[in-house]
Amino acid sequence: MELIVTSEASWLKKWDAFVIHQNKACHLNLSAWNSSFLSYGFQYEIVIAIENGEIIGGYTAVIAKVALFKFYIVPYGPIIIEEKINQLNSLIEYTLKRAKHHKTCYIHINLPCTKQINSHTYNHLPKIEILDEAAIGHLFKYVYSSSGINWKSVDGYENEEALIMSFKPSVRRYIRSSQRKGLALQLAIDEETIKKGYQLCLENAKNKGYSLRDWNSFKDTIINLVFANNAKFLLAVYDGQIKGAALIIKAGNYYSYILGGTVKEKPDFLAGHFLHYEAIKMAYTEKLSGYNISLGGSKGVVSLKESYADAQLYFKEGQYHWILKPLQFKLFLLVEKHFKKHKKTISKLLSFLKK
Image (cartoon, rainbow, N blue to C red; front, side):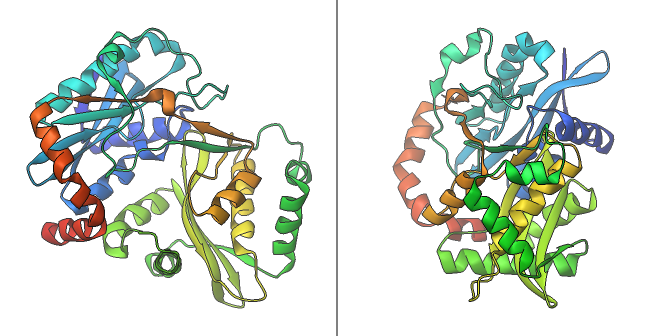
């Protein structure tokens, strides 16, 4: 197995194609997604494992720097094809080598391991010696690392009616009700239309009290993903007005829901139900494995997501970290409570200083 650290366009294209179709991958492995961290002054790198000229695995890492502190974060992975699972130990060892190369004080990895059987997670791993030196869990929370998959399978359904019938009766009613309200699906494929949809998502985030990246720091990532056909920005439109928006990204042989927003009004257009089902139907039509409706959110959002999903798959068994510079990391923990209070402000400042 050969390991290369690369930013060459030809290799990134091959890597992204691997990520799109490799079951154990997800959108956090895509090169365009990780390039979004450049707007904050962070770095990222892609490590590709090659054997006989073919990609068999790898990972993407974000090298986050805040003041004196540097962190090596692998948000998802490393990943490797099932046939080469015995080489995963070497791949994880390489993450430590790279973290030390960048002189970081901390590193974490996020193996997609679950106790439940699913083709998109590792259900059984061989003995991985390097993990004996690691601590369980993640201590750095400022670069998103997936906590799991909220899974809806679209495999094995004879037709769309069979797919709809796979949902609970209450979900079926919401889906069909949303379809009767006259909403039309529109794919945002140009910057102006994508921006309009994203503005709705920003308004939702503001009204509900959670943070979302501003348009200028995230637009290149979204546009590049959409133009490469690795993402879809879905709009629910009624009489020329946007009633709902959702960004979904294709990776791992499935679509993942990334973010969205709806207009709150009476009567309720049920745009959220409309868009989630359209995303699920898209996965079904494209003969993908399923739809990750994602974990987390407000109580109401979590309830909606759970009503659509077949199972919640958590990665607690695969989250590990190493502290490479104990004194420096201890100092970070002392000031980290101040970062928590000002996370949004720090993000904006980093973006500003990068301009």
